[in-house]
Image (cartoon, rainbow over all chains, first blue to last red):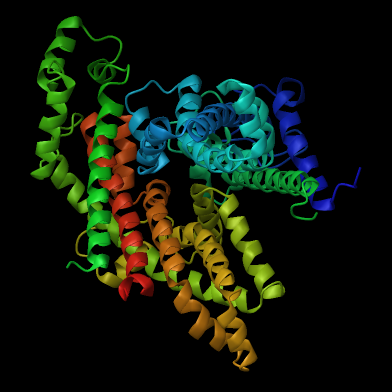
Length: 272
Length: 319
């Protein structure tokens, strides 16, 4: 077992801390999610570590609860986009022919409209609830996963061991999950880190526009929206989520890089 | 015989038009056939059955979807985008001014971002793996990791509030001189530049580094040419196609960034218009905006393809 490089270790610690705070939010957060505990925009103090927000809620608690929502929605959307995108991508590569054509052209079409615009168009007629948000984000993002997994799988399907499995008479499911999936896992896992970050940015943007997570639920984009008026008075409350999102993005990236290096070096790929 | 390059370009343009048509179907389907009822969402849960029926008839919701799609499409082709449900205004006139404002903003952002990204890309290739390269990639990585609206507020906090250099709200009105107008949009332009600069510079760097591995670059090195001459005279012309592609992709990305940045700076453009009307569930406006954004996005991607076809000497001078 090689030592974990410093960058990856830092990434792991931060990622772990954010996920830990999200999972254990009810026990960590000093105050309730929507509890008004002081005046508006109180400065940092020993009772309110990050001060209070626009209507006097404890900002640290809001950040922890908000992190829970943001990370949960982003993680669920990432899982959905990966299961959908990779299974369809592998299927397209294994089946080829018209199945591949239909799936690939549909994905091309979906990617011809920017995903934020598509999401706004869909959210203008759908009720804005968490399941709908997760579905919309997951499906829109699965197009990117589809492209990657199809490209990876096309290279794998021509391998001798896949041919051998076919000649053995294995079914489609076996070939996809037992032959292709294990060999395509390392680029997919690295991509998963990037897609997760993208999902965090996406849900934050939607909430900032008022079309994502709805109040009184907290989430990082929403906290910016609620506190943006403070900025012109020099109150930095709205910048705290910026710090959280940036550190989460960088630390997840560091971990994903490390995983990619580690798994590909086992196969005689890039050193690391 | 038709020149093969003309044939390629015509094919590509035809494909783009087909794609746009398909995108219009997708936008239409997305707003009309999804399980939400438009009339219900306009009137809210407390609507009476009679008013729902009236509104449905008024919106033509009782026609079959295919008929509605073709009515909508033929209207769009004649420049009639319909009327907004929320205030009964004609969408095309309301959108015209805002589209102008948005293009003005995107234009200035592009004018600054494109040369800056290419120069920074050249510098980081020249000093690759030394401190200028590391500094540039570190800073651009940071701007990529933060969403545009947060970059916006960070910029407002420091540049507009602490230093008071620029206005924190980009309000434009008729009768402004060009200078005043440019000063008003300086903050959103800075934010948009930061948003696309990172990707554009990194991809430019990668494209040029790719060309730098070729044999003719080694020849140029062995001839004793200076590093900058090699990069500017030998590597860059051969990296034009990928670099143009990168630039166009990022300009297309600018179209999306504009939506968020306009909301941050309360700028009266297309993005603000779209977001406002999504919140009001004003479907005709959302469809029209979606279509315009999709058209710009597909158009820029198409332009990128055409330019990279034209930039390829093998296609320009066929045997």
